[in-house]
Amino acid sequence: MSEQRSLAPGRLGLRLFLLSLSVLFAASVVGILVVRAKATVWPPAGAPPLPAGLWLSTGLILLSSWTMSAACKRFAAGASRLSARYLVVTTLLALLFLANQVLNWKALWPAFEVRTTALYAFSFLLLTLLHALHVAGGVVSLAVVTWKAGRARVSSQGLSYAATYWHFLTVVWLVIFGLLQAVF
Image 1 (cartoon, rainbow, N blue to C red):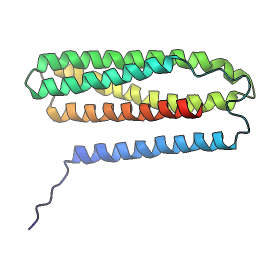
Image 2 (cartoon, rainbow, N blue to C red):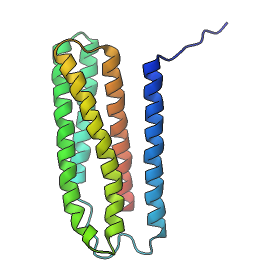
Image 3 (cartoon, rainbow, N blue to C red):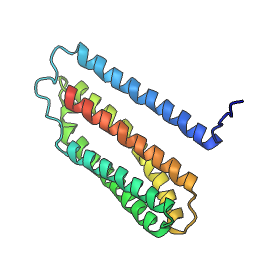
Image 4 (tube, one colour):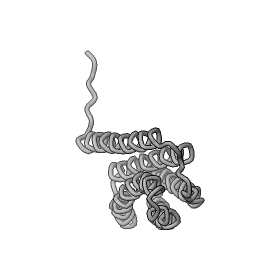
């Protein structure tokens, strides 16, 4: 007889949540690709180049994913204080990512004022703002887990859920960044 393995309700819920977010982001990407395919000229004349700060955003989120992994490894090894420090760094990197995204939006903002470049700017904003809103939610999760870790109250399951979500956001950003570099 084969033994059936069941998922804990929290793990199942997280997987369903990430699946729904995957569909949301995929639909947004497809929408942008359709807009791009229907455009006669892309980027439109007069459109500003992509903000160079996107590279910094990418570095920040990759580094935050690394620090999150380091926090999980330290926690599993019983070094909860060191794990909490890595979580603080992860949270700070996430906040820096969001602050840098605001600068990226400001760099592209003038494109909204010109009719011929507004859809170009909107497409950029849609992808990056949708992601940033989920990063903001991730920051809340990180803050809670960090606070609990600092008081030795975080569970391995809670840390695992936060890490899974954070790594998911990193992968989504890499897809968005790649799309922006290829299509914009």
